[in-house]
Image (cartoon, rainbow, N blue to C red):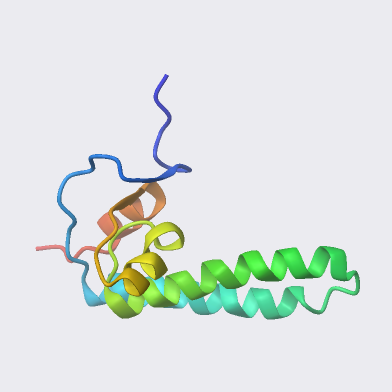
Length: 110
């Protein structure tokens, strides 16, 4: 049974050529990233460090990867490929169903 790509991100599958993203899509990724970074800061206010730090680290990773994705115009799954693409200086192809749907919604209408 094949899973829907809404909640599944993959690396290295044959997903076809990457697409360019518009400035609206770049801003959307950056806004999500800043929101996740703010959430990471909020998680550090939790009085139990055993709960606060794992939540903050996960939120910071999502935030940083989405900010990088907006900065470098990374069109695919930010949490898997944006930072890796930037560090390795080559495009690492991933697939992310949630951003595909949002990108389709954010595309300019003609």
